[in-house]
Length: 110
Length: 241
Image 1 (cartoon, each protein chain N blue to C red):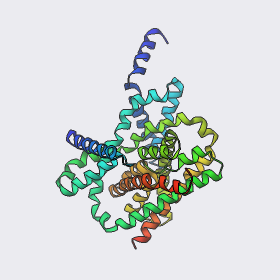
Image 2 (cartoon, rainbow over the protein chains, first blue to last red):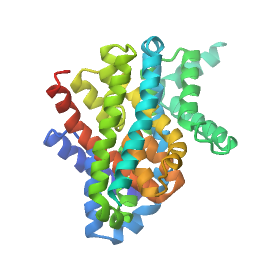
Image 3 (cartoon, rainbow over the protein chains, first blue to last red):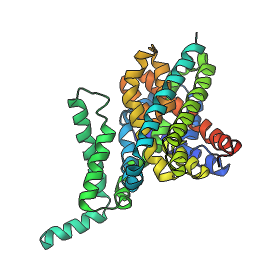
């Protein structure tokens, strides 16, 4: 477990260094994910060792969004004033975006 | 409160322990409610946990910044969790290699649809310019979305909230949408959840299957990278910023 955590943090660190070093618009962890993917393609044995801890972390992914979500309290007034356009826009655009993505892929895979 | 209780409160409210524990407890409680509701995706655990915590903070008059000092330990784990997405993704590599172009085109079509409809609807319904711009990057993962919002003149902290709400909506509705448009392939529905509902869609997808989760995680990364590069450029070309 500690081993896996060290590897995840190291890849994140390298990702952050690359993201900031080249002022890329992509966050460090996403670059870290791509680097780890390349590493696993080179060393397939590693995936099995990393899987238990990684899957444990990913099973509880939702809780990690709670602290940022509580930030809703900072914008109470604005959201109260403009709740209708915000809610309609979020629901409709999310549904349409999801449908557009899924149908495009399904159609192209035929 | 008697003096002893007051001093305990003063001590606890300055250490990160209390709000860290409160975050985990609120989530456990929300998860229990979610299970009670027979895992109905509309009883979203993140939404319930956030509601509990906002209520607690309002009751105790605790500012958000203070809360975040404790909760940041949970927030921090988003980084390593994002890196960890490489592992399920690696396990789906064969399928990804076969259909990469379809997934890439789907990402562009889906994100463009989400951005255009989100901004258009908000503008038509009379939202302020700051809200319209803050809505633009709402389908991508929080750190990227906040960076984009800053670049295009939105409000980064409002965007963070819109991102979470979008994630909750997408995670809750996916299960009802996919059967209606006859999408039964886990890799496709997972990917669509990642494109529109980022990490929260991914979290929900992992609850259904490892394959769905892996493709959602991949979609989240690809969408984030493409949106970060293309959205500010597109808005500039259209003369909106």
